[in-house]
Image 1 (spheres, rainbow, N blue to C red):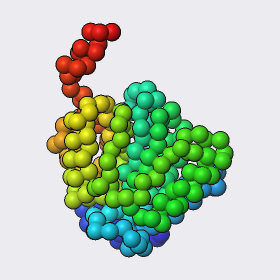
Image 2 (image 1 turned 135 degrees about the vertical axis):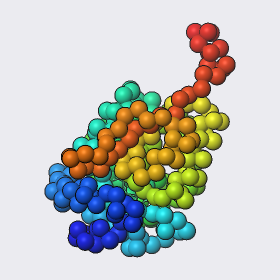
Image 3 (image 1 turned 90 degrees about the vertical axis):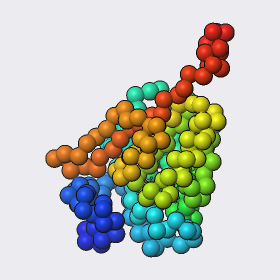
Image 4 (image 1 turned 90 degrees about the horizontal axis):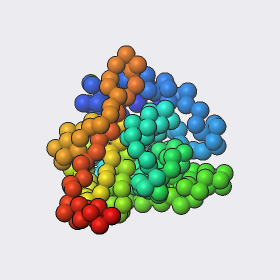
Length: 243
Ligand SMILES: C[S@@+](CC[C@H](N)C(=O)[O-])C[C@H]1O[C@@H](n2cnc3c(N)ncnc32)[C@H](O)[C@@H]1O
């Protein structure tokens, strides 16, 4: 993708606000060696207009391009916890780069949600490649080929990752589903949001920032890590009292 076609494919808001960071990220994207090192297919970006069979929320979708390893690793470290009990969920998983990077962390389970059947196929192929190279988490990773709006969150502690996948029309119902799930079964939930264009929607739903990278002269995309305080219910107080 050329710099110009890339800039044109951004929304107007993103273009106005993030053009310097986007231009610098595009150069880093060109220099990215992940696929050359691993033999995967994750780096080539795909415009939303080139995706078929993605349903009604096409208007709200952002193009596919992958997160780089460095910011991903920084966000995981910034979550500041033992990730072993957590399920990693990438909403808008694309070709699966974030899932592949997540295999370096001790997650319980990996799930990618992506509404493009073509991108889901590429993600599965990439995961198989990682699995053959002895990464057990990749062997058991799941790709849910679905619109994030209709995704039902699994049980257990959650780390939900997003790389600016969609606009507020989709993010609102996604957050409503997530909050309903957390209220039904209270459990820890961390949000790792790269290029957090709609962070306010998470804050409005009771999520609290615990770490962030702000914009600056480094000209890298900002990110934020948030969590939702788990209410101390009578049940958990009782469970602790019982030892
Ligand atoms: C910027 S890419 C992020 C890719 C991946 N998460 C990563 O970090 O490497 C955003 C992805 O979100 C997907 N997407 C957009 N809207 C979606 C929706 N409503 N449901 C599921 N996936 C969606 C796009 O197809 C695209 O692959």
